[in-house]
Image (cartoon, rainbow, N blue to C red; front, top):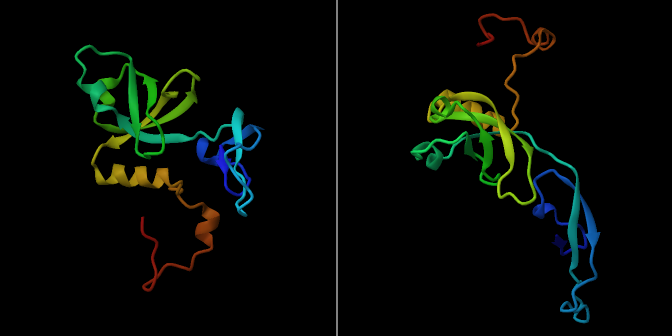
Length: 165
């Protein structure tokens, strides 16, 4: 990972991760004689904290179309920055046309994809309610009901104002 300002560039890591970095000497190709700053180079040697969360996605169409079924399928997350996630499921027929929620459990250093597990189905792909729930989840917007304490802070209902469900 490198940065123009001498700080660690977090783009090489998952969003929100904290990484342990070992530094290397600046490359000999960089010259500071022209007033330019030398690029700082580093190598990620460990990950201190993972910032994994639950991701919305759908089963990869290639896994659905396979003639020989496997328990291992790839889930294509809605967020294009997240790689496909490998899950094991015996419910492929039930979730193949669904938006699902999956969680990452681990990522073997020799694997192209992280391993995770199925959390729950959110609804049919393309359904307006489902896709709205996916957008709200992906942007971390709370959808829980307001507490009684919050509702008590609202003005009294009447002709001018009413709480809608």
